[in-house]
Image (cartoon, rainbow, N blue to C red; front, side, top):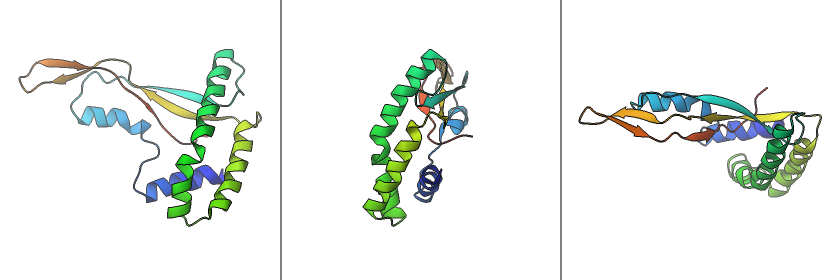
Length: 141
C-alpha cells in the first residue's frame, strides 16, 4: 500500500495524472465527439480469481506489471521523492511479494470505448473515428 500511495502522489506532484481512465469519456465529449460509450472492466493483477479466464488475464497482467515496476517507479522515487536506489529496490521486492500473494486481491480499472465515435466535421457532416482503449493505473479498493 505504501508503494501505490507514494507512486500516485508523486505522479500528481510531477503533474502527471496516474489515473486518467475515469476522465477520458469527458475529454472525448468535450472535444466534440458524439456516441461516446464507455465501459469499465476490473483487471486482476495475479492469478487469484476463481474464474478461469480472469485467472489467465490476471497472470498475464502480473507479468506486465512486474516487468514495468522498476521502470515506472525509479524516476519518481529517486528524483522526486529523494529515495536512494537501494531503498527503492527493497520496497519493490516487497511490492513483488505482495503482488504474488494470492490472499491480496489487486486489480485496476480498464476503460474501453468500443463504439466508433462520431464528430461533426467543419462542413457539418458526420465523421466516424475508431474507438480507443485506455488503462487507468492505480489501485482501487
